[in-house]
Each structure stands twice: as C-alpha cells, then as structure tokens.
Length: 350
Ligand SMILES: NC(=O)c1ccc[n+]([C@@H]2O[C@H](COP(=O)([O-])OP(=O)(O)OC[C@H]3O[C@@H](n4cnc5c(N)ncnc54)[C@H](O)[C@@H]3O)[C@@H](O)[C@H]2O)c1
Picture 1 (cartoon, rainbow, N blue to C red):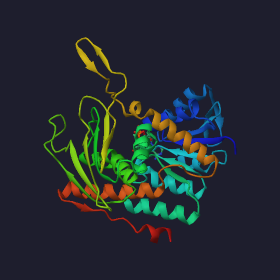
Picture 2 (cartoon, helix red, strand yellow):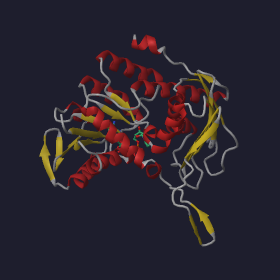
Picture 3 (tube, rainbow, N blue to C red):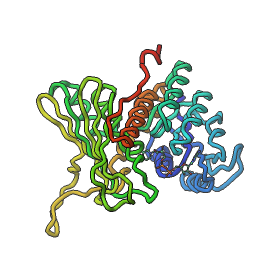
Picture 4 (cartoon, rainbow, N blue to C red):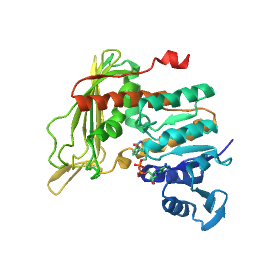
C-alpha cells in the first residue's frame, strides 16, 4: 500500500481539523470518507475539502472523491477505507472502536479511548486477541516538539533521575454546560498521559483538590482544580487545571530532577515591546499551541499505518489514562486520595 485511504468519523472541531490536515498537510494519505451524526455538517465539509459537487454514492452522497456516510459503522466497514480517524464524542468510541477491530481497520482514536476503565480494558483485550495493534490514541502532546525534547533530555539521564513534575493547564473559558468532572476527564487526562510517559511509570494514586473557585463559573462548579499524582516508583506530579482563566490557552510543564530542572511551555515565541508593554502572545485556542503536534501525530500515524504498525500511545495507554481519571473522579467527589485500579499488564497480555 503506498497511499492510505482515510475515513474520518465525527467532523466537529477535532474531526474537521484532522480531515483538513489529511487533505492539505499529510503525505501518503487521501481523505475518502467522512461521517457525522449531523449529516449536513459532514456534507458541508466534504464539499469544502473536495471542491466537488454532490453526487450519489453507495452508503450516501459523494463530493468529488469524498463519500459521506450517514452511518459511521458503514464507513468503518467500507472496503475502500483503509484506516479511520475517530473524532466522535467519547461516548461513541467503544462501539466504533470494536467495529474497527472487527473489520481490521487501523484507527487513530481521539482521547478518551472510551468513557470508563472497564470498557477501555475490553477494547485492549479485544485488540490483543487479534494479535496486532490497530489502535493509536490521540494523546498528541507526545508529538509536540517541546514535550519530545523534554522526554529526550530526561531519558538521557543528564539531569539524573526525575523526581517531580509541575504542570499548569489553563484555558480561556468553558462552554455554559461545563461541569467539574470535565476538568478531570477532558483536560487533566492529558497530564495523566504526560506523567505516565515522561516517568515511564504507572500512576497508582490521585488526589484532586478543589480550591476556592473562580466567581466566573456557575455555583457548584470547581474551577480551578489542583491534583497530585503518585507514581509506582514514588515520584509525584502536580497539575493545576484552570479552564476559565480568561487570558488564553497555556500549558507548562517543569520536570525537577536530581541535578537540575527543565521547563517547557514558556511561550517564548516572538517577544515584542510596543505601546508601553512587553511580552509574547497567549493563544486563545489549543489548536494553535498544539498545531505542530497534531500535524506530526497524523503524519507519523499515516507512515506507521502504511508499514502495518502504530507509532504512538497505544490502547493500553488509553486504558491506563481512563483508570486514572476514574480514580480522579472518585477523589473529586470524596475529597480524599483514590487508588487507581489498574489491571495487571502481564495478566492482560499473557
Ligand atoms: N487531543 C485533543 O487535544 C482533543 C481536543 C479536543 C477534543 N478532543 C476529543 O475529540 C473528540 C471530538 O471532540 P470535539 O471537540 O471535536 O467535539 P465536537 O462536539 O466539536 O465534535 C463531535 C462531532 O461528532 C458528531 N457525532 C456525535 N455523535 C456521533 C456518533 N455517534 N458518530 C459520529 N459522529 C458523531 C457530532 O455531530 C460532532 O460533529 C472527543 O473525543 C474529544 O475528547 C481531543
């Protein structure tokens, strides 16, 4: 196979972004199909990206070379779709992932793998039974050049053993339907993956604190939140997640090691002095901060898929993150530390 024919399921914010990335920025891949619960949204995107006009096709409509499937499961099953990008909401992932496994389709699944640890483990087990890895999870920070350089530095041993991580994760504002649980499941999940990846260890316990909330959210919503992760080797990571920070999108990570520390995310792009102010811009949108990470993620996924491999976070990584977030939700509601209930990896993989 020299060109990967990609179908995208769910073309909201992330899916439309990925579909456009496949069309405009990714070598060795071609967008051939899209599907969304909102058929009109899928049709509009297919028309925009293909430049074609509507025609009839098996399973729905087509625009140029891009077919629009009313049913996402039909897209996954289609013989001329080699691989799938899953960017539907988390609640739809389990069924769609099982369909990808059933049809032997490699899939780049946006986080979360599924909505809970039990169904994520079922996905891991079903993939293991197949005997080949088809699932890569969209923890794109691992592909961000700054995070990748930090990982390389820590793994080199130059700073000695890594002891602590301090993380900051701030967004400008949330949607009106925002709930406290979303901080753990949708935002903090990225730091969960980063801590597991940078330390190369599982998280065994999590405590989620709820400090004085901002007055700019509805009563009862805990924003910001402060969490502490304890890792299997005794190391610790803390993370502040503040979704209604107002200023913009900021992600920082400082690793403290035996002989020094290293920080990424200082936003040291173009530093200007003008009109009595000095500083750099803070983007409002996470897609600006992590654009390069998404581009590299999708290109490396395409390259690896063409070789019959994955090259990034696995289904196990998605499961482990789900298990930590589940414990995080327990801690958020009890106010106490919660142990992470993670299956024994050697038992799962035999
Ligand atoms: N990696 C990241 O940085 C990142 C950032 C944002 C979102 N995400 C993840 O990406 C996924 C999509 O998030 P989003 O922000 O694009 O959401 P969104 O609401 O903008 O888009 C979701 C789309 O899926 C469609 N949809 C709903 N049910 C569906 C179904 N059963 N099958 C197919 N399509 C369906 C909706 O109509 C919508 O167009 C989520 O899993 C989310 O957690 C990841």
